[in-house]
Image (cartoon, rainbow, N blue to C red; front, side, top):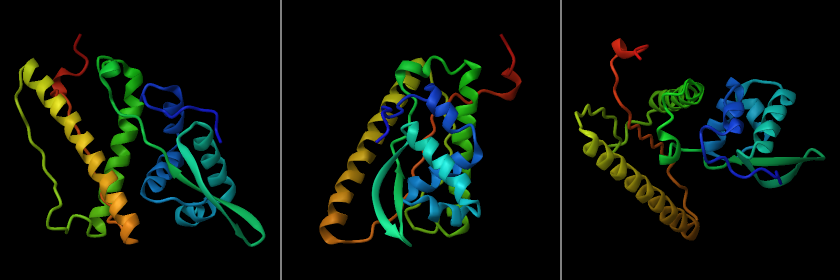
Length: 198
């Protein structure tokens, strides 16, 4: 077991290190979807087992993966990992978004979202009748922004509770769960012309 505590803040140096390599970004996305071993991951990525094992070990030591099981495979012990919860923006560091050190983390997360959504779209993931794909520009004052941010946090908490209840039903019915992707972005839609202003 890694001695590291879970990464809960996107300004954590461990998170920035984790997303500093494209293979680690892809591994996190894959292990978000389902547990897997380095052998399986290497096959899916078309990369060498040594390279994938190194990056999986790095992510594990950083506290971003957990070991969920082991099994014997061809005389060796195969380790199965899954991604732990990823950090989210919180009130504690939302005021620091102007710091340029946040840019790599935000960019990496946006790239992961784009890649995951693109793969899902190519495979028909948006064909479900209830799938959502919307963009809603809003004009808000400070209070409206705060109210919307609070509503978003409450909605995310509700989504997590829905997933917990679904997991219980799936385990009781031995059913196969539906893999779903959920992305929520609340951001100040600054015009490009404002970039670089004091």
